[in-house]
Length: 391
Ligand SMILES: Cc1ncc(COP(=O)(O)O)c(C=O)c1O
Image (cartoon, rainbow, N blue to C red; front, side, top):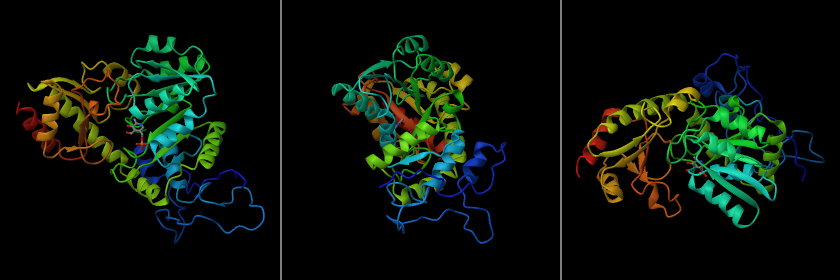
């Protein structure tokens, strides 16, 4: 089978005026052509194969593992939001998207990763190191000088910012520039911030990845990932990987993600405003040992986030007074907040991350990661307040 070059599944419908805001692009990008009688939303195409006799023409669809119409609009829309010149490449999960980037590191290569990051990303690179495929160096992304020093000889600098679950904020422009001077490729996991709040490609990053499971889709109903780059060469490499490895997304999931993306701006604006308000109140609560949210002036990430981001995101780190048992008791006492892993849905969720043996041992045992949703902030506060006041 030929690895046919890809063309956008739905041709760019109408040129986007250059000055559209991202809030508008989330609504307009990836629409079908604006012509009489065409649907407003892209159709879901359910077909594993395409009519094809002889040698397929360039860009012609052939087989759904290679390309299918329902991917293109979502890939186009996320690329528009991230400011990429190439369409995104959607995968069956965030981890599949991450794997496609990690696969680019040559045998014997070196990867620099945050000491705190999504635990499965760290598990993945550790597994590569165990098999002697690469060496891995962990850095505190908030310690710029030490992170830069660790980049010598690196092939890939992997950045997550704010980090999961510690909410450390990386000085992206400085780290990206240093990584390039060290000759490394830079990939940024932008899942926590979303392109509304942080745009790593504009700061020079080579690749952005998302767990689209989280804010992009936004309703805790699909598992998906996507990569975005402005490099035609890197995009072709990622596309070839997807075709070879086959971690493709189902059409329904991608359609749902595009539907969710339409309200990204509303959801993120509401959730991050509520998160900032809740963080402010939590910081003054007698049942609280420590709160982390970059919006707080006293937060270690506040200065960098204010300089490099367009907001502070909607994830809060919370350490209730009394240690891990007290943290578990807070989770159990909540009635509105849902105890669950994952994040970025319309509903507020939380979890104690160290309940997983695989979470980094430098994450405090009592740290609760809160994902603030779009419910009324007063309802969210009342629930948190009563749960924290029991002890
Ligand atoms: C920051 C971050 N990146 C990547 C992933 C992996 O995404 P997925 O679960 O869609 O494979 C997650 C999942 O929680 C995450 O939090």
